[in-house]
Amino acid sequence: MADSYIIRLVNCAFFARHGVHDEEEFLGQRFFVDAELEVDPGDALQTDSIEGTVHYGVAFNVIERIVTGKRRYLIEVLALDIAKALSAQFPQIRLARITVRKPSAAVPGILDHVEVTVEHRA
Image (cartoon, rainbow, N blue to C red; front, side):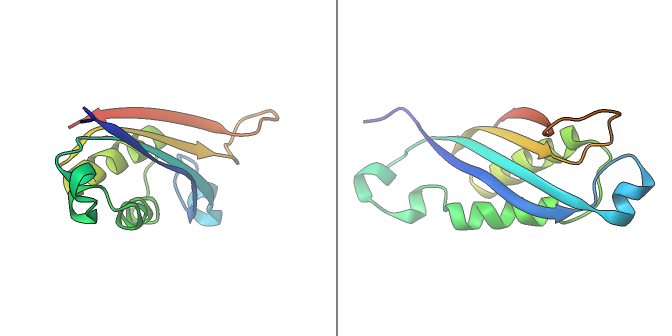
């Protein structure tokens, strides 16, 4: 029996208004989220039942609700809030590693994106 397994939701895209600057709230921008969830298998691998695991459709909806909800100044806080919400929704999550990417970061230079990864152990 497996001790744990990993579920990944990769490059979930949302339009939101996070950031420190007023124009970030006014204009908004796309944010991309990766969720890597270490899951306690319980009996899900034996029963082949969705009830014993993390339903990734529901997990996506949890991420969407947090990202498109209230404004956060820091994407670090956004990532932690996502991790906590997923862990609260799914008690079988042992570790939630959340990465938030902000392609249009307000920096005085050219870059693909800024990203932050937060780990939350439930």
